[in-house]
Length: 554
Image 1 (cartoon, helix red, strand yellow):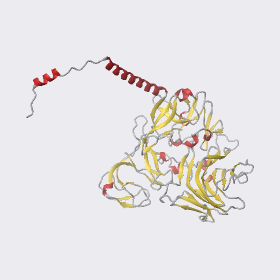
Image 2 (cartoon, helix red, strand yellow):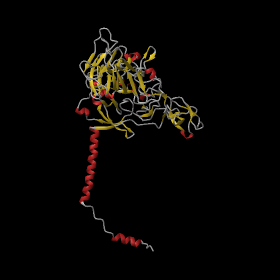
Image 3 (cartoon, one colour):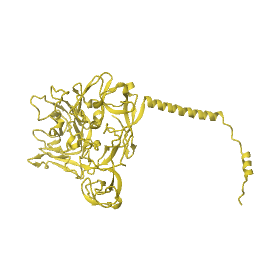
Image 4 (cartoon, one colour):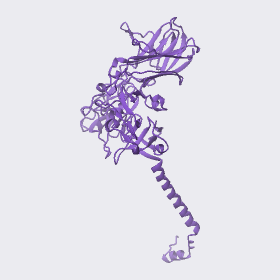
C-alpha cells in the first residue's frame, strides 16, 4: 500500500535537505566573462555595420537582371525557361501596386501535349464557384478543355498582360497569383570600399539621395566627365567607353536571348535559326535541324552552308512585363529597338573535309550592326600561317572606308569539336576559340563629325540593319549549344531626348541596368561624393537549394 506524506514530512524533508552552497568568485567570473564577450560581440557587430559591411534588401527592379526587387516567377509553356517579372510596390509603405481580382482559376495540365501551361483563368468564372467545371481555354495554345473538378478554385489573380519568354520569344497571356511573390535580393554592401580606394566605372554602388532613402545603381560617370548615350552605348567626352576593358563588367551585362539546349515544343512558330531562302525556297539541303539531339548539321562539302537567327535583337525586358501596354506605356512590340551589340557562342564538331578551291575549309560566324558587318572564319586542319583564322569587315563596305582585318594562327582539327565565340560590343569585335581570345578589332560606328548633343539617327531604329549568321565552308559540321546574347542597351530617357550631363569635381553619374524602368541620373542628375555609402559586394539571399542565387555582384 502506497504511503502518503503529510505536510510535516515535506517540512522535514526541506529541513533535512543539504543547503545550496553560496555563489563563489568562480561563478561570478563565469557570468562576467560571458557578459563581456556578448557586449564586445555587439559592439563589433555595430562597428562592422557602420564602417565595413551592411545588409540591404533590393526594393525595386531598376537593376534587373543583375539584381531583382520584389518579383514573381513564370515558366514558358513552350521551352520551360523560368523567368521573373517585377511586382511594383510603394517605396514608402511596401504595399504591392499590382491589381489583383478574385477569379475562378483552373490549375492543371493542358491536354495539348505541346503545351506545359498549368494555370488558366476561367473566362466565365467571375468571382464565385458557380462556373466550377466549365470549359477552360488554355491561355497559351487556345485549346478548349474541361478540367478535373478539384483543379478549380477561387484566387486573387492578375491576367491582364501578355508575357514574352526571354528565350524563345513565345507570347502568351500570363496569370499571376497574389501568392506568387518573391522578395527582393538581399545583398551585402562594402562600406569600406571607397575609404580605401576610389570609385571605378561600372561598380554597382549604394548611395543616399534624400533624407530617408538609399539607392543602388551602376556607376557610369566620374568627376569632370561629360556623359552621353547613343545607340545603346555610353560615351565619355565624345568617345565610346568599352566595358570589355573592365574586368567582369561586360560578362555581367550580356543578356541571353536564345539557347538551343532548351528544347521547344512547337508553340512558337518562328524558329530560332533557319537556312536563308534561295530562289524562294529554303536551303534545307545543306542545313538541317535535328530536334531530337538539338543540333544543326551543315553539309558544306565543296560548298557553303548558312543558318541565320530569326527572332530579332530588341531591347525587351521580360522583367517589365506589367509595365508594357499598361497606363499609357507602349507595348513591347511598339517600344522595341534593335540592339546592334550581340554575341553568339556555339560548339562546332567538324567531320569530313572537302575544301572549296577558292576558300578552303572553315567554320565561322557573321554579325551585322548597322553599316558594319564582321565575319569570323576559323580554318579546319592544323594551324598555319598560310590558312590563319580571319576576322574582317565584309560587304557592304562603303567606298573609301578603312579596311578592317586581323588574322591569327588558330584552327579546328578534323574529328574534334571546339567552342567558338564572336561578340560585337561597344565598337569592338572579339573572337574566342575554346575560351581563349584569338582576334580583336576596334572600330568607330559614330559617323565622322557627328554631334552627340544633336545625335544622328541610331542604327537601332532600322530593323533590317542587323543579322547574325553561322557558316560552314568546305566541311561537314555539327553545331550545338548555340547561345545568343544581346548587350546592355542604355537609352537617353524612357521617353524623350537627353543631351547628356557634365560632371563637376566630386560628382558622379549612375544609371540602373534596367534602363527603361530606372529612376536615375538621367532624371535627377549627379551624385555628390559625400553621398556614396559603398560598393555592392554580394547577394546572400535567396540561398535555398531550389532557389540558390548567391553570387558576387559585378
